[in-house]
Length: 111
Image (tube, rainbow, N blue to C red; front, side, top):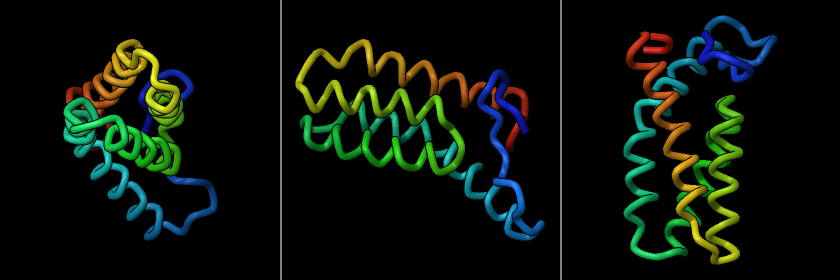
């Protein structure tokens, strides 16, 4: 299960087969929900809500093995925190979500 490049997404080594299957189902659900998460971030009513949503995405993405997505969410979170223009950081985050979803949905990599 690969999204190309360095971000291979698979269960951690050493998991029993049943748990690994459950882990993959959670990853699938996470990816399916990414477009809505992105919309929620983009349409957040204020910077505090945007920061919280980005913080949650940072942790979830990292936990599910999406390290690039986690890093981009963290970058956007930092832009919100220091109250600078978030346009570039959110565009980078959007690009990564689009890439993951395209690979997952268009090529059937995880769905």
